[in-house]
Length: 91
Image 1: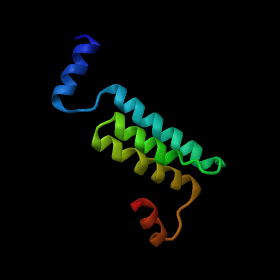
Image 2: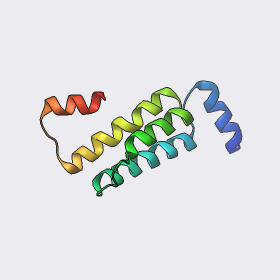
Image 3: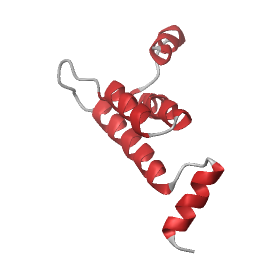
Image 4: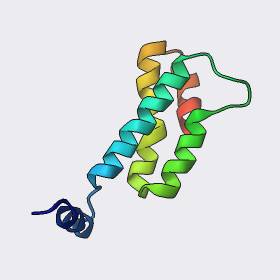
């Protein structure tokens, strides 16, 4: 089975393609790296990648990008008070 046929079959089932997963993991990795490094003023890579994912990926994957990036980078940076984290994740 050719790759194009496989992608068409996956799309009929409603499952994400391999390219969408690669984009998802790339955006999350970019967000985690940039969130750990010192950032420039007025630059929010998590919000930018969330908007981009919303425009390119489907709704479930678009919601996973900022949440996964925040959760993974918080594992590296360290967690803080749960009341603050609820507000950060809700926004």
